[in-house]
Image (cartoon, rainbow, N blue to C red; front, top):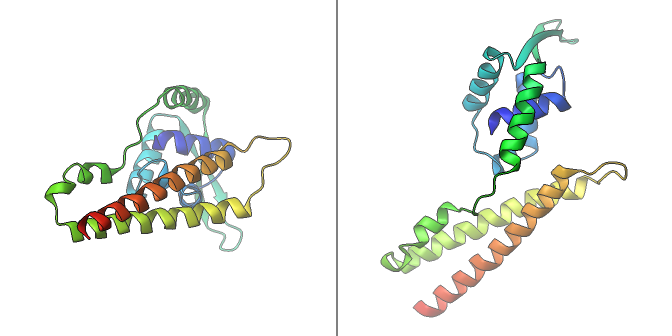
Length: 179
């Protein structure tokens, strides 16, 4: 999935350097779409270059006069982007939360500690909702263009609201059961 993100960002931002692309991924909260680290990002960037899907260009930084390495997508990269769009665009998976694995054994776990785990899920979900709300409050969909990223974030927000409601109900039920 990281190669798709890099190729797509280079289509949107031709001539960007690696740090710019990574910053966009962090700013746009792509971590909620795919797990990535700085190392995995740069590894994938290097792999894309070695496969001829992107190529380095150079740009002189105006303030320092330093030469920085920038990237652009190649025609092979465009072909790969289209293949990856089809690959990931046709996949559908179950919603998976790591918390579900822990919940399988909830009856064998200390109830007070389980309440703490549920509260942790509530806190994390509220933090994600705050980030999504901030993003959605500062962006508007343009009338001549569908902003799929905005709509994806609106959908993500809806999922988080459902999860938050469920976590709170689960916590209330557990608190009542342990009275």
